[in-house]
Image 1 (tube, rainbow, N blue to C red):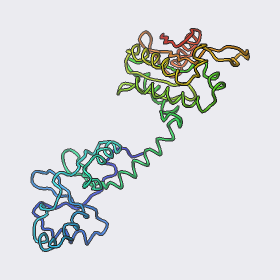
Image 2 (image 1 turned 45 degrees about the vertical axis):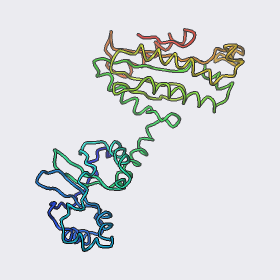
Image 3 (image 1 turned 30 degrees about the vertical axis):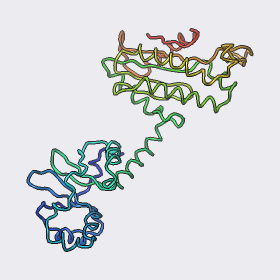
Image 4 (image 1 turned 90 degrees about the vertical axis):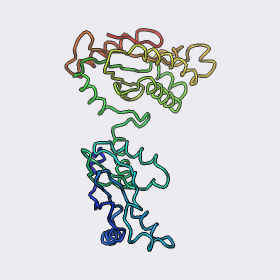
Length: 312
């Protein structure tokens, strides 16, 4: 999958600022599919002349006579969008869409090591963004849009090599009873709202958040400072869940339903458990070791009433 803007850059003709518009006109006529021409002077700062703008100017009442014998620097865009070869295509697309309306459909120039490398049309950028999103969708949970198990496994493998790491396994207790009482549609809404809460608290370059499936999530920190965000998640969830229960059930603090053991009666309201596995006291050499320790911590969480965080 192509991810860098330089990977999709194409070569375009380059002229000097002193080149006449007549020569540029010939270049465009000789290359009917050519969208733009780069203009580079002695300062090496690239400018851009788009085909559409060039012929718009020539098409005015006196445009042909006014510009044809004069230099291209009168019609070029001296401040086009210039991006570095290694910039992500998705980031570039955002920058392109934030331009002034008159430049919205202009292409962009790509530089590498300070020198002009090539040109990318806005159409090509948008097509590549669509391809990237389509490929990424395969690896994302369809309900929450969070990374799914294939990406989670890769990130867990990476975590075994971190000097400091905290792996948080998050799930909802008594969620089955909630689904039984209120239906799958409201259950899905609760899962999505929980995902939004986790995104809010578990964000940053040093944090990864994934959706294992159902009501199970995972977060990976490149540090051991999990206490504050976990507390905020629990506090936020206890407020959040009130929006999903009927008043009577919230007042009773339980629902009537069938437990996992098959007994019918009052069942506690849904709560959130966060089992934390860190390498503070012992290193983990494999994903299996992390999962084994997380399973042990989750059992402890399940034995405690209400929303809790338990760490090894």
